[in-house]
Length: 465
Figure 1 (tube, rainbow, N blue to C red):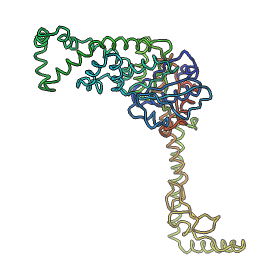
Figure 2 (figure 1 turned 30 degrees about the horizontal axis):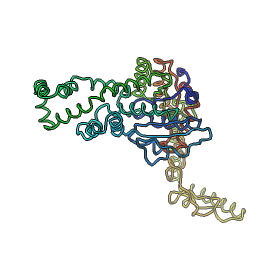
Figure 3 (figure 1 turned 180 degrees about the vertical axis):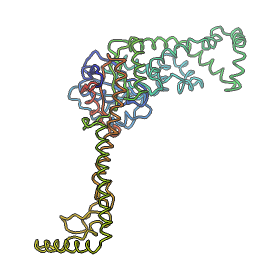
Figure 4 (figure 1 turned 90 degrees about the vertical axis):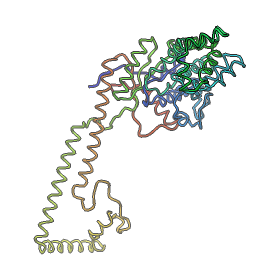
């Protein structure tokens, strides 16, 4: 018996006008992007003016919404039912462009040009550790400040750790407040020969090493960048703190997305605990790609037992047929007489019915097919079902059924394993609302697929169902 958990009710969450931000988070590869897109479609078709922000480089969101591409500008999604008054926009974070926008917005034109052209800034904005997560926070703050949408749904970065999204502002703040940055800013603040002397005294060993490894101009580029960015560092920290407080506000809801696998749920449990420590509002957990069966009453054990019984019966039938064939070889005259009598009887029956002689058995088995007797000619031959070999009609059906039973047993074993894994999570966090989303046979690639996912999310089935 699976442990029970509270039901995660999605529609009330989406319909509540006080819900302004939904953050989908979790470890990589658990379906955060699909979940965020499905929530956006459902919210829009229920009357919300929604925008989905994805940081997924695979661009699956654009494909599923019928867009040729997504970029740093929100684009309206066509095909949304707007009868309820809602709409949907989608965008994908362009990390460097967002960083550039921040620089241009918070500095004068001359200083902005110096920063944008600086080689160190170009490397920092393109791939510095934590920049993607921090810029996602910046973009979230920008979207919220525009107030053009009443619901913002965020698909967090596909990081190794689901905590990177929360840690990014603090990491960047630590970097900007670090001794290295302060040391680099000191010459610009002191100025003149005193500054150069201070830099030479404090960094002589580091300068020599950096010059050998990365080139003599690196330190100059870094120092120029730091001097130009000096007035902006405080703004970075201020906005990061403001966005962090926004994530803690009552209008924000975190949805942890996980798969019914041990590692994914372990990461989900860690994230649930971290959200509690940071006083951030957790709405619940979406358990994605859950397997089920339409014949759940047939357990794996019973299915395997039935498969073995069918295979034994097929083996016994084949053995009996083989013994009969051997007996026929030992007494061919008796068998021939019996065949002739049987053939004569069949021919006579066929003539009495007004038809010709019976279709020879050899033709019936030729070329790997079965003659359609209703049509009465060999051209209507049909392929045999998979699993039934030529000349193996005796026991073939039993073996096919046994194979299907074994497949069912494997599925039920997967279902049982997923339930045990989920029960371990529920036993530790029984207060977390949960909802299941059934595993699909293929990827979601259109609005209809997203609507189907949204419907499953909204049905509110408890995780123990």
